[in-house]
Image (cartoon, rainbow, N blue to C red):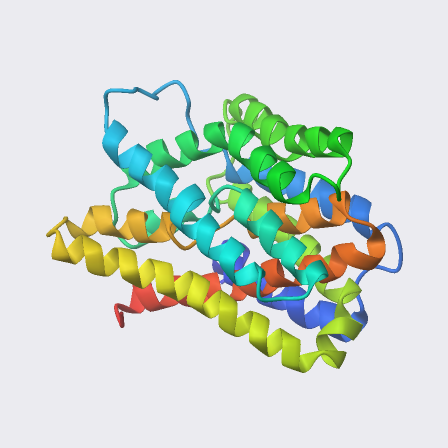
Length: 295
């Protein structure tokens, strides 16, 4: 029972949202706690990723498709939807468009009996190209709004450092469920902090929250369903369609939240992070629908 709870990402995210709304989050050091939590979560989430096995010949076509789905199709739709909202919220959509896919794509692919080897290969490749794509998108759309030094620092802390440390830590023997439990607890701390900080906005601006939720429903289910439909039309095997649809619908919302907090002034940062918090919920629902085979 305890092992199942500790390994449940959904449980910790929902718990973080509920407690954040009830308590208002941490009384102080929210930024520092959030940053440290995500870095640790990223390190332990990236343990399965391996760069030693990368080969340009093996599955290169599918990898390119995955990159285009995540940084092309999905990012473009997020940018278009973001343009419908006030400036401070639009900034959150821009940052969301800039980040790579969620690490959760790998365990979800495994659970749904998709092609795990392909998913791992594509995930590793997406994080490598994110060194260029993430800062590029942010600079193109937010160049006048951000400090470039802070952006470079954050790319190092949130992408480069976790990737490097994960390759070192993976050599250490540890219980199979421990990395996932540590990552889930850290994601709980992150969601708890951000939701708590946004409590007043979430309660006082219900209408805008509902509109954001609708936009993110379209973002997550729209791209995912479209890719599944195209895959079936082209008679692709289901084990390939599963990771394709996940790369087309998942973003690293934790990274998006932290970049918003770090790049923008405090009066803007937590409002800009709201879309990423809501997106996590829709992504969990999308994964549950795939698991239940109702779509």
